[in-house]
Length: 209
Image 1: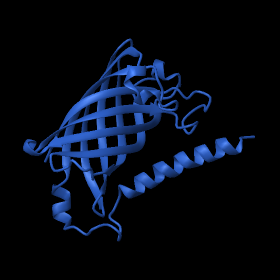
Image 2: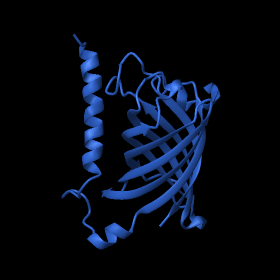
Image 3: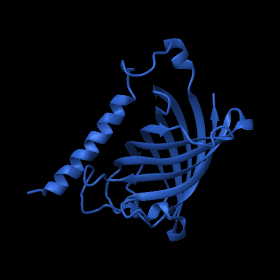
Image 4: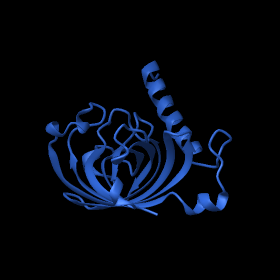
């Protein structure tokens, strides 16, 4: 019989993915209304990022600490098409990103993920460097089971932890740092006892159009 902690972890993950997916869909009454044609044409960007996997996990928090990283021989190159779906008041937006990735090294495989993201857009230095923090939760599929993930699953949860920076003089371009993450979301995909997943600290550039 599953424990209460197991139940609430799984329920929280399902709810998070469901809310993100719903928010990325049709506009609701609480967002600022926009012309449909303008909405379809605006808010697009194309990004490229590259990174290398680390042993440390998101679960422990060490995947966010560069001085803790122990690199593995898995190298990521990724292209992502992103669309702004909804603007939330003045400080936040919801995007959806479709991403195609290739990983090489000790194992070669492809990945595709669809990940809704929510942003925080307001920082004190935005007049000089427009900065956006993003958190995304979605689904990911790889062309084969990934050995370093310690999970015999091709379908897993994807997560994006990102900081995007655009100096005022750059117009349509920005640079970003991202943690590119896959895991079983506390047993939502596969066995809960296997929680390693994969983490690729990455850097990239994005063109906004």
